[in-house]
Length: 486
Image (cartoon, rainbow, N blue to C red; front, top):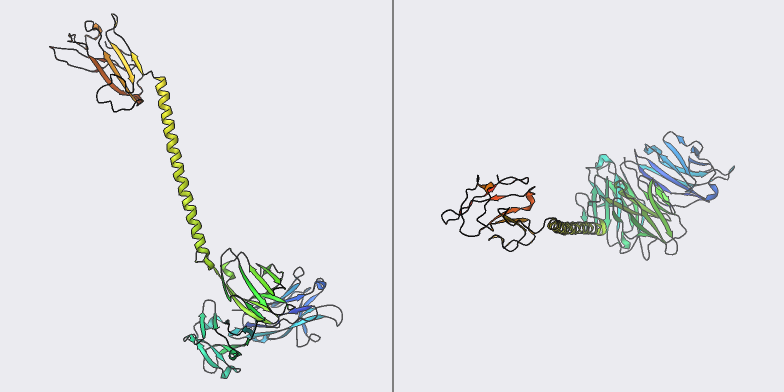
């Protein structure tokens, strides 16, 4: 069930203070804060029920913190003890006291009125400036999700005049919007005038005589507001922070930040219901700032600024990080992603360029090393003991075979030539493969071999020369391991 905590005034009695009124839907629970002075840190605290403190009946003490559905917890560091009541019923409505045991009849405390309503609950007193606008939340139980809700004006609920309904949500400057998921409908009034001051009702339509509702007093003032906020609806994103500026008129009053269904946190607090919050009061400018940090989706809901018994409701919406963020944060995130992509792509291109340049340099270096290890010209000259001359040239040199002139020097190509210097002396060792003929003139025979084949020995070439004045050539491979023609 929905719990609604209303701060309807913080009066204080001696050195103890609390909210003056709490309104809660039946079936829910509530946590009420009781603040005390530093000198009472070690004193016994208690919660009692009754019209007068002197005669009220104690329910729980800090030295006996649990009694049925009521419990109390003391936090001396924050100078507050909290009272939690669960499974509330209309029978729990009444007057209660936050008390601090001093001695004898000198206990100090402050009174709070607890109202448990059946069906609908809202704020009680709202004061706004003339010409401004206000949004008032009205909470209802889960079983009324599909019912028609309406806003009406008049001191008596049975005779109030309906202004807008959820099935007819706009009437002049007044509008209503229902949110069944959050079990709340909100009423917004624009361009407020003095004539708008009155008693209003949040109502849920049941039947003609049994509609449920709760009332709120709206007061429109001239001049500066005694309590106001810059925006009643604030949005943030998960993991981020949001801030609310609450401006007040009475600098001596206690300031509180409260959550519906939760508890309240005073100035200098660092947490609210276990969630990180920072509250600071600037008495010179009369502004107390609330910063909610490390937001989570569960932080979405209605909160209240309270000062001097006045309240201004504020709705906080926490969006997932992937959604459009309040204030343009999504555009900033998109720009950041684009920047990262561009930088990454640029780095990849630069890396590829470096790799290509390095490969080119290394390849050129390997070619130079290979050229040094393999002489560019090798000749075997024919003489009386040798039948032929072998010339080995690397790259393009004089006498390279036709058709190879387009190759660049240093290419991985070997050109070999056999130059017959004395055609009269052809070795008889080739006679079995190369029948002796008498050539007409000196002839050069050439072959081309790629270097990367890594020939282990000298490849010899035999040819048969000159028959009947016609050149005939036969190329024979005789072996790869320093072999010769036999």
